[in-house]
Image (cartoon, rainbow, N blue to C red; front, top):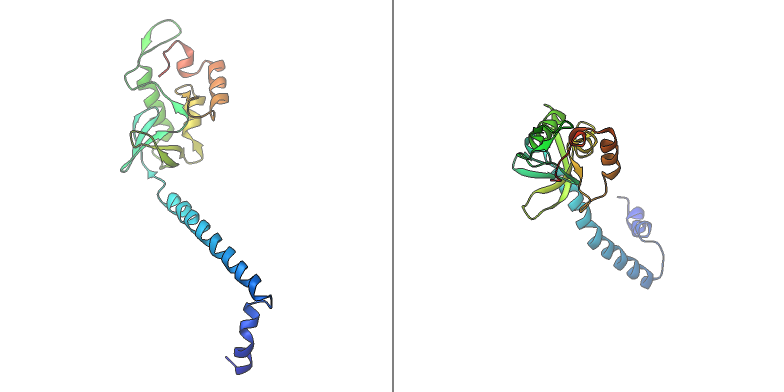
Length: 177
C-alpha cells in the first residue's frame, strides 16, 4: 500500500465518533454475534440434517429414512393392524389401507422430511414432502389419517373436508387411532 493510504486507512474503517461510543458499539456487536452465530449454525445444521431419501413406511404416520425414524407431525393414522368398518358394516384392515396410501403417495421419488423435535420414542417429528406434496396434509385430505389435535391444529380444516366427502376411513365407521 502507498504510505499515504496506510496512514489514512484506519479512519476509513473507524468513523470519527467519540471513543466511548465506539466501545458501546463494539460491545453491542459482540453480544449480537454471541446470540446470532449459534442460531445460524443450528439453522444450517438442521437443513443439512433433514432426512431425504426413499422411505421405508411402517404405517400411515411413521417411516424410516436411512437411520432416522420419522413420525409425521400433526396427524394420527390407524394402527397397522387396526380394523374399521365400511359403510355396509363389513370389516376391513384400515391400518393396512392407511399404510398403503402413504406408500402410494411417497411413490418411488425421494422424500424430504423437515423437523427439529423428537418424541419420547426418539422419532423425529416432521412434515414430509414427496416432491412438492405435503404427505402429512395429503394423508388427512384422503381420509387415511386424522388431524392430531392434541399436538397441532394444522390439519383440522383438511380433516373436515375429508369427513364431509366421506373419504378413506370416513366412508364408514372407525375407532380413533
